[in-house]
Length: 142
View (spheres, rainbow, N blue to C red):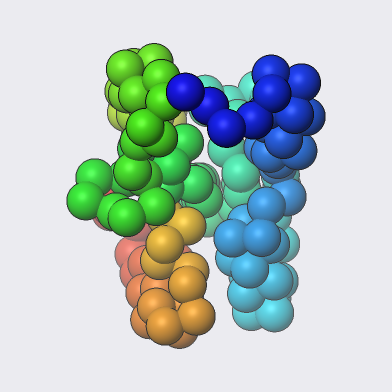
């Protein structure tokens, strides 16, 4: 049973952002600081990618661990209420993510996925260094 009233739960869920999240802003600041310019949330590309680097034909998705069902991540734990519904939701999102990545690859885009948990203060530097390495490497499938 949910501890919140339906109205309070609805209000709380309405506050969850899809764009311009803190993890996304961290990656964007890093890219901009490195002199890279990018587009955001391109509706014409599969999955409406978070960051589009046209010059190097690279897409960056910054996924929330809970919403995209990050395997083995503490942040992706299912709630105790409506767990079956949430499990289906995460599975649907993960399946859609895989389809979008396949489509983008077939269109010639290189796709990089960064998870929310990889941008925690302890892991952030390593994650961003790895991102820089991937962006400067010759274009190969990642």
